[in-house]
Image 1 (spheres, rainbow, N blue to C red):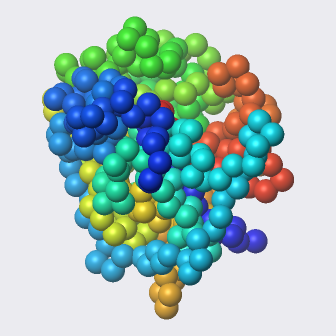
Image 2: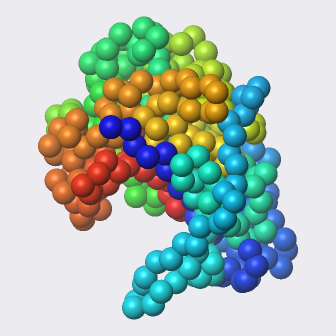
Length: 367
């Protein structure tokens, strides 16, 4: 049975009419300035301005929009969104006044039924998605598999990237990299001293391959334990580049971005040392184009755009990414341990939520 076409796009970083939370702290008096460098982009004063202008402060590549963008019409009547919290009945406008949300957009049955922006952001701005990019990489890998460029997800990464031969990640199956189950000892808690920080330092100094080869120790056998680590997506980005013979930007643009009917240009930040895209994050697009991406996934890989109906990614591959019952038991909601709880599960670079119906989400740090 097809999913009802429904998508919710949120960009909640530091991010209408009424005052949003912490405006002064977040740079309102200075017009939400863009950071002078990438190193300062995550400071409160700069985070709003920078998260909608990352490609002004760091090198990037571009993804072109579709020649004929997918229609995203506004509903004749806006849906009134209600929710209950602490015994009170609240609205979407109440939410925008209580949350650091830069944008909230809701699409139902192909129509834009609600849209809000905070902190002076607009629908024309490209918003940083952080780890939502991981799902985009997985979608492009699925398409590469359909095109015969990737033979099997049981292949190891070094099958496609010989420069990783003999390394931990090089000897790991693609399926386990996509499930965040390489088994590598790697702590990603966004501190200044965790393994992510050390990995990123090597990447910035010596390049992506050197960073990946610096991860050398397994804590668990591959495929058994979920351990969220962006370095695994960096491997997948290199695999996609090698398999397609294109940059990640070009491969995703051709396989995913244009086919979903994107309306605006998107950008992907690249590592200045080697020009390789930061596959684990750093993708920037308008909120409405994120909605178009969500609509395609909600429609099981199909874009139904008026007289034209096209398949972007096969339904079987979408189910492999998003269906809890297609994941090993220890990766399903209620069974998978993450940050002290078992609420969420994980498919191929995609979060899976519990419930009687299939539910999944693209999530990035800072919302």
